[in-house]
Image 1 (spheres, rainbow, N blue to C red):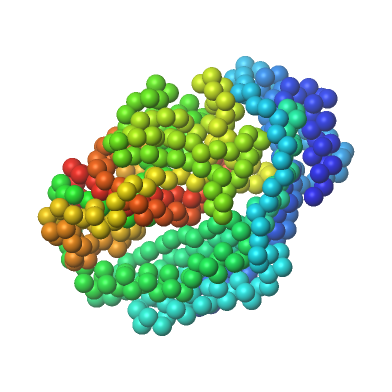
Image 2 (tube, rainbow, N blue to C red):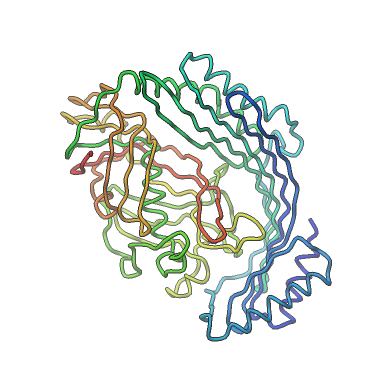
Length: 470
């Protein structure tokens, strides 16, 4: 990495009117493969680097980026950005950042099979083996979309507080979207796998077995599924359903920039207000955390993109709202230190408040114990569709693989059960939590321009009472 470029930019901003400056240099290798119906449609690779510069001048926040490392061109870009930012005057509100001490650190995610040394055939074969596994099931899968992506990014972050962080975090990702046809009906299912590490992580997932089981369960649902019961029923949700609920209904609404309205015109607002800290939002069984420090996780980091040390945040603890996700700007408005939740996808994007690995902590029950005592109910093992409003309040989850619960046993497959609920009713409805914690990958979208950032979402199986299946 050309760290001298970042050092030059920081010194130039400081000497030309910036009251605070932060420079993030990134160097990335990317490889990708796309396969449709056993045909490799695209193989891509790229290597790029660039520098993003965020600063405060005349108490106004500015951001500019470039992949041009010529010093004169950089000076011209920074001069223009400083002039524009300083001239905003009354058009923009003053920006203040919470205090944070300087950090110096270097860390790296180790790779057993290094991504930069991996041949194209190995990446292609991963998807080919998966597609072959689908075809060997004999299930009619007329549309099979599989993709694989890996990136190896080294980041050098410095700021005018004295922080200096170097981090290398390689990540791998596999995505599938399948369409199943049977009995004159069709069903679709998509999912994502992701982690930080080398290619050994992707091999460990056992993609052929995952896809085999996926299409077999979908076929069972299509050929043997009965109409879903409706009404107020006990509901058991599997870890994948719990995970999307946590992410959408207990992650996004607690992002402080949403709460203060900065994301209103992009990703939306929040039903949560600062006055709700310390208030009850769920049952005593509900503890939701966001933790970027989980080794091997898709949302892994030790320091965020403002140089703040990452830590586990308890968003909800024992049903009580405990803290929001903050960057240094939102933390200042609440008189708090930042809790290290500022992230950007690339050097040319401003870092904003983001989740990392957000999940419901496990309980003490075995999953099968959640079915005990249920005379008639619904088990949502996973989902095919979800949506939620801009304030993260009203939401809907449609089951993909789902079953009837009868007399404490999981029995008949059912088709398309729908749970519609509000965030204020969802979390109080949980009366039991299993210990079968699962963490699943996602690429969370937010910001303008859009930033799809790697995260984990997850939790164990949960049991809900008093909610309606439609």
